[in-house]
Length: 248
Image (tube, rainbow, N blue to C red; front, side):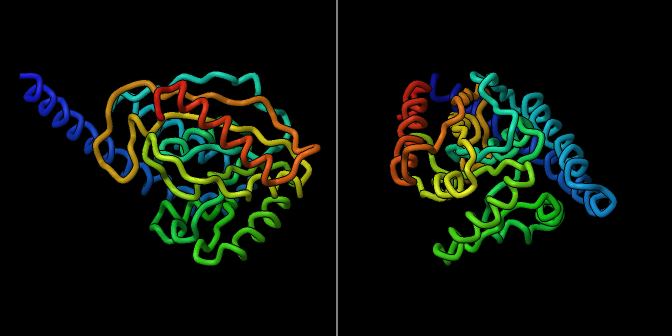
């Protein structure tokens, strides 16, 4: 009986997820077309505010259709100045959500994403740092140079140091790019831990209703430490938060 009920629940979740993707996909095309039309007429802060209308819509649509909500701890820790934002990466949810927390935030991403019709075209207008993951040395140089330029212009930089989406409970070694960028640019780091993969798992359609937990750290100074030490400290902090969420 329990197995039958579980199967029924998963079928319902799948249908709700498909409905979500219908609205999600239509909104991506609509907003992508709008961005292509308006972005050339707007400066970067105005483009960012326009895009955030879609981000907030996507989060509300997700909550309405799939029953996925979120709660945040540490909002008071968000700095007033541009910083490097470091987060674990479990789904597409955090790429949408984290951008809503900052007045300007560019994301480090793989170059292939910019080729996606509408979505990628609009994303390209948001000044991302698009890297070639097949050339790690050149990618690191680009992250540090382009990231320092964005930060100097008052735009934060979001980096997922695992480099790819990771299943809940799985661990990957963090890259040093975020720490090296913070040291080069002379800015603080803010760490964000979340368990979005419990509701929106990577590379799967079905989403599960529930509460996504988000914790924001106090700004971390790079003073008196090197990139390796700072990276280990960030990874330890995020993994400890995931253990508190029950993801081990």
